[in-house]
Length: 407
Ligand code: SAH
Ligand code: TMP
Ligand code: ZN
Image 1 (cartoon, rainbow, N blue to C red):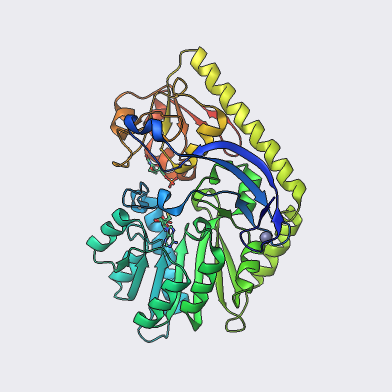
Image 2: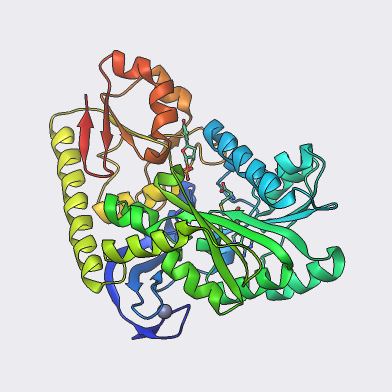
């Protein structure tokens, strides 16, 4: 028995993905022996609607001076965050005198660069020093600390309240969600707006995209769970905006209660979540079965291709792929290497399974028979770039929403 991270209700895990390493913990051969693993169990709290990891490794094991995820490597995500920033400027900043935006988990500055270029007062809170240094080198004001209530109080004292507090793919990383929500409420001006987006529970259930679950993602939110969390801290949902990024995300717009008009989108999505059964334990029992079906289909396909002597290469050494490979029992003999454009991952091995990660040039020089699309959330961008791979007889393997070979 354990207690819900949000409401303290007692919860039970409904499934385990087994022993998992740090998802972004790409490592060298000499580090194999000391690799850290934890049991990755998930639970759903029927009281507050939060989908969560039962255990999460200590934050410093995941976010540090060698953090491997650099946001700006995707051109599509650059455009996505430009549009996000424009929405904040248009919807929140219009008519305000010298508005101030704070972003949590600002990474290499992919979003804040847009505010900086437009001359707005901004501050990034980014604990992973190496990615924060990239932002700082571009003149983006960035503080390398973990956001919490205590930091929020200091920020208010030093900079005043924020007109907008924003983030993307960060809230779902933070285990002390009540501390962060309290800090956000503290930091936000009375008429300020909080916007954040994260992978959406409704999409994960529909698509069986279980690879959204890994050490960093301690929560997979729904509108129901977000409304519950922030209600306790005096904030209400005023809008919800579905996004296609990261395989299906939701952008939540919140404000101090009673200060802004509430869009009809909110009631509509809350209702849809009931219709989808996101509040029911049986939905998660079904999800578990769907995960097992997906896992077995992928393993069997890779076994068959190995027996046929086909060359399979992974495309994108994503954090999500750590869950897929470790859960599905994939071994180095199934996948020759994983191609990835991130220099810090190249020359290292994938967490847990230890498949070599090589530069994209290796894929280009010697294309395999099959490319296993780990970076499926970037499929549009990748398929556009890889037309010649397919034209020359290369085949794609995808596994969301189901395991499939694309000829
Ligand atoms: N916003 C970027 C980066 C997402 S990765 C994007 O969407 O691409 C998550 C980021 O959150 C990492 O850079 C990590 O260092 C940061 N992070 C983790 N815990 C945090 C905390 N408590 N406060 C602020 N940032 C945090
Ligand atoms: P993400 O799914 O967490 O955004 O990570 C994507 C990973 O895939 C990142 O390591 C970069 C890599 N990648 C490629 O190697 N080639 C590509 O074309 C794209 C879009 C990403
Ligand atoms: Zn709960």
